Every structure is written in structure tokens, then in C-alpha cells.
Length: 255
Image 1 (cartoon, rainbow, N blue to C red):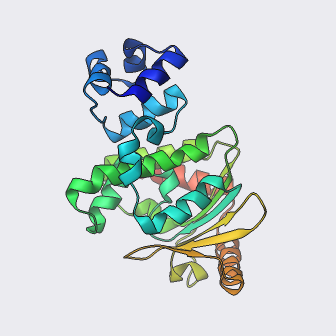
Image 2: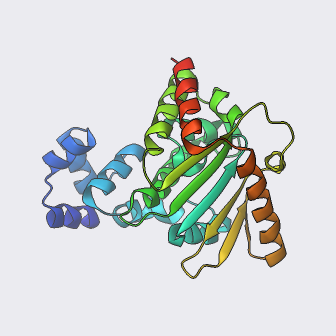
Image 3: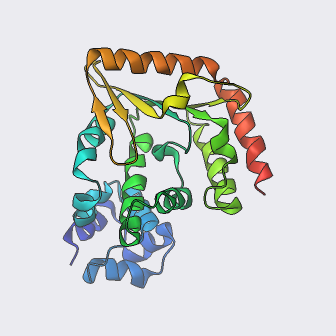
């Protein structure tokens, strides 16, 4: 018996039938989540947890405990508590803005994760996105290279769905996306992706990613260098609404 799910249903007034309708599955499926302890598909876990006002890890803790590598956990805590996130990506969309299909294509295409573990990592990535749907979300600013919009990650349907979802996300007041046009030559972003988090006590923390693992950056000089890189990529990018218009335009080319 999944007691955490049973309690959440009781406290929110949901039944297996009403939760099934909200998530888009058969009521018998929700019954199996309860009585047989089955772990739902990634998107169903996220949808059910959101409907019940819980974190995915509160209802399915086994997946939560195993979902991220040890080296990523310090950054995950910083990300969860941050009041603002400034994120630059030159190759793929930031994880917090990825659709399920796009995330699966990225994780599969990287070839670094065993296929048996792909769904667990997809679930982890979707779960992290909950911070942008909170009542008190961080201010999220992303600068991305235009090439990301035109790279066929997952195929045409996946890209069309992803870019349309990105346009919808950009309508939220706390989410800003800026695109560096493909006409821009060399700029600081070509050296690789990075994220800058502002903590509640106003301290800064940085995150650098590579093929093997990520690195949390706290050294003052390193942070100054990352901030300088941010100012460079932001200066080369279009405005938020110019970027949204471009994203919407490119989305139609994937139809």
C-alpha cells in the first residue's frame, strides 16, 4: 500500500476516479498505484503530485532517493532554494523548460545513461520543474543560442511541441527567455553552459556542466568570471518578446 498517496487523496478530497480523470488515466491504474505500489510513468507522477499539491518525492520516495547522482545533489538544493536563476545554454534548452519528450530525447541521445535508467532521469528532470510552478517561484532568466531552436532533437513533432510549450512558459511573469541570433559570431557563450543562482541571503552560486558531471562554483573570482560571461551573452541576445516572436516563428517550421 502506498500510504503517502492514500493520505494525500484523503487530505485533498480526491478519489481514485477524480484523480484518474485529472491525470488522464484509467481509475484502475490509480488503484494499482495505491494497492500494488506501482510507480507511474514519469508524466503521470508529475501530474498526480501537482494535482495533490505534493512533491513527487513525497509520494514516491524510492524514485526520489535514486533519481539524481550524488554529485548533483548540492546544486539541486541550491536550485530549489534560489530566488533567481540565470541560465545560459548553447546546445539544448535548459532542463527546467524541457518537455518530457524533449528531455527523453536529450538524455537518450547523450548515450551516457543506461537505457534502463532513462525514465528515472526523465522523471527527475520533470520533478525539478516544479520550482517554476510554486506560489513563490524564482525569477528565471535564460539565454539560449538560436541553434537550439533549429536542432531536430527528438524529431519534428517533439520540436514543435517543445517550442510551443516554451512560448507558453514565456507568458509567465517570472520567466524570461532571450535568444542569441545565429548571425552573432564569436561570443562568451561558445565556451559552454552555466547557471548562476542567487540565494535567499543574496549570496551567489554557479554551476558548470560537462560530459561527466557538474561542478558547483563558489569561489569569488570564478563567480566574477561567470557573471562577466553572463553579461556578455545577455548583451548579444534579443529582447524577451523579440525572442518569443522568433521561437513562435521557428515552431511553425517544425509543422
